[in-house]
Length: 142
Image (cartoon, rainbow, N blue to C red; front, top):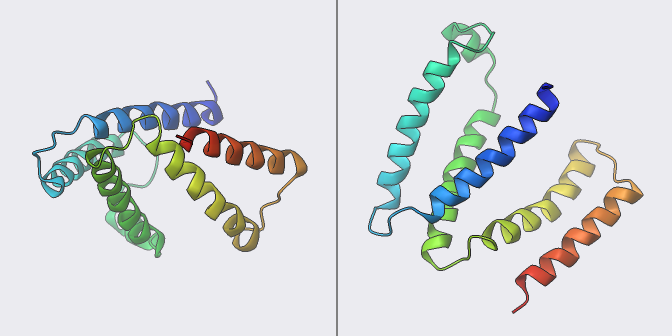
């Protein structure tokens, strides 16, 4: 299987597992204790996986490759985890919360991609965005 297909398959499988796990989180559990456990286990998994990834594993190479993005990603991941955990505790539906969040993010990311990353918006993609918007309206309609 190509890396192209494997990578997106991993993303899809992870999103499904992520949403199910978030929706199943015990309500009595302090969300910050839950996140501490999640990240501690994540560190263990990443440490083990590091030895299977074909790259320089020296601490110096790690530090030389740093910029602002890993710190921003850390803030984003904590925000995602806490946001979904609190959304499900507040009563959001498993099928609806990811749609609302992802479509809203999509409409913020499109102009960012166009302006800062010089991505192109083709006619086909514009129609796809329109269909996303229609789907969003239909999915959130009561």
